Each structure stands twice: as C-alpha cells, then as structure tokens.
Amino acid sequence: MKPPPKPPPQPETVGGSGQDPDTLFHQGLSLHQQGRLGEAQAIYEKLLDLHPRHFGAVYSLGVIAAQSGRHLEAVEILDRALAIDPHHVEALFNHGNLLHQLKRPREALESYQRLIQLKPDFADAHLNRGIVPQQLNRLQDALASLERFIQLNPGYGGAHFHRGNVLRLLERPLDALASYDKATELQPDHAQAYSNRGNVLKDLDRFEEALASYDKAIALAPGTAEAHYNRGNVLQELERREEAIAAYERAIELKPDFVQAHFTLSQCRLTLGDFARGWQGYESRWDQRRQSGTTTREFAAPPLAWRGTAHRQDYSAAQ
Image (tube, rainbow, N blue to C red):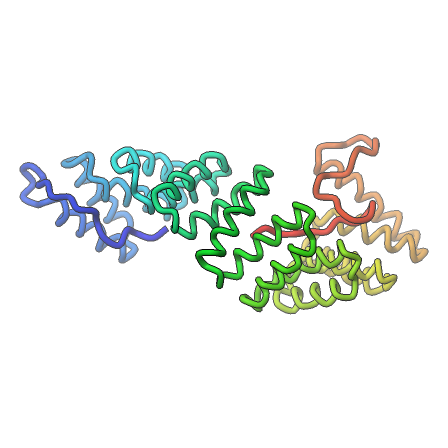
C-alpha cells in the first residue's frame, strides 16, 4: 500500500494553528513518501488533533499502519476514513485487500462490491473479487469477476492463471487448460501456471504432456517441492518408478515435513520390492492423519484436495 499521491481538497483553515490543513498535510505526505513513517504519523496526528475529520490524514494513518504490518489497526483506521468519505475508491480497495489478508473474505467482498458499484471499470477490484470467492467456494462468482477483469485488461497473465484454477475446480479441464496456456503465453516465466497446467493434463491422462509441463515449471522454479512431487506422480503413471522415487526424494529434500511425499515415496518403494525402506516410510501415513486431526488408525474419507488415484494427491497453487 503506497502513500496517497495527493490530498483531497480540504479548504478549511486550522483554527489558531497559523497553517491551513493542506499545508500541514503536505508536510506529512512529503515525509511519508520519503519512508519516514514515524515523523509522517506525528504530522498526521497533529493535523487530526486540530481537524478530526481530515480524510487525507486519517487515510494516510491507515496506510502507515498497513505498511508497518499492523493490518487489524489499518482496517479500523480505514473504517474511520470511509465514514468520512464512503465513496473513496482507493480506500475501499485497500480496505478489501486488508480484510482479505486478515482472512475475512466476506467483508473483503463487500468492500470490493461497493467499489465496483462506484467505479465499474476498476479492473483490480474485479481481479481480487475473482480471487477471494474461491475461499468461499463461490466459484461461479469468481469466474464472472475474473472474466470481467480479462475484458478490461486482457494482457495480464495472472488473471488467466486464476481463471484456470477456478475452471479446474468447476471440472472444466479443457477450458482450464486453455486458460493456463494463455497465462504462459502472456507470462512465459509463470512457473505455477506450468505446474497447474501439468495437473490438468494429468487429470486428462495426458501424462507425457503433463511431465513436460512439470519439467518447465521446475526449470523456472527449481525449489518448488510440490512440482517435484506432482512430477513423481506422473512418472509413476508412466511406470518410471526409479525416476519417480528421485522426484519424491527431491520434494522431501526441499520440504522435509511434506508428509504426503513421504507416504507416496514409501508406496513406490514397496512396489519395487524395497520393503525395509518402504514400510518405514509407510508409517508416515499416521503423521498425515495427525496433521489433519485424526490420530486413530481408522480409515476416514480422503481430504477434499485428494484427486486422481486413491494414493496420489497433486498440489495446485492459487497464488
């Protein structure tokens, strides 16, 4: 969140101060833009002592709180700013972003919706309104917002990536694949788009193409454990189990607490007859159940993210 570029009009003079509000505000804003947040905050607070409803000062204090990582305080301050000017689109946008970061998606959506009603062509509000509903499983709403953003800004690869994620959840794999293809066309270094593209190709049993997509993702971001794990799953489908073992081992090297990778690696070793290491790793399934809150050895239903075969779970990222 950046400091506001300019103050809103504030024609009133500050009684008895010898300075008008805009002059004092500009002093704070200059310090703010230099990154001298403490000094800027002191100026804004001085202004508010003299003029409590100065929107620019209240809003800028909210920006400073957000920049300092005090997100809950920032939301409360922006609430005050929006009580003064409920039609300020940047305040509404930042208010929604902060609520999203605080994992309050319904309230974030309300802020984005208020903004869109005021300014229907505010593209980034449509983008964020397409990302947040995924947390609430409101996938059709998410899709509509992402498609509106793409109408306004068709050249942003990230929007096509998020659209692909939603379409996959809606079980429209070919449409999802087309979105990931567009994302990588527009943003060739988008590693996660290649990885999620590989997941869709795996869903379609197009394993060689999935492998190539995972390889591209790993070339761009070699430290992503999930891509190595997903690559191992496809190698198993291709019955290239020694290579699958190497992929799972690399995933675990990058993410030692990757329980599902330990478990799937053990199954692969058991298939190859490596019973000593296979059975040892197979015990990691109880670690997986402890992570999910299930500690007894009763086989519960698989988690919601479980996909594909009964023992392989792929990993997609939304960000």
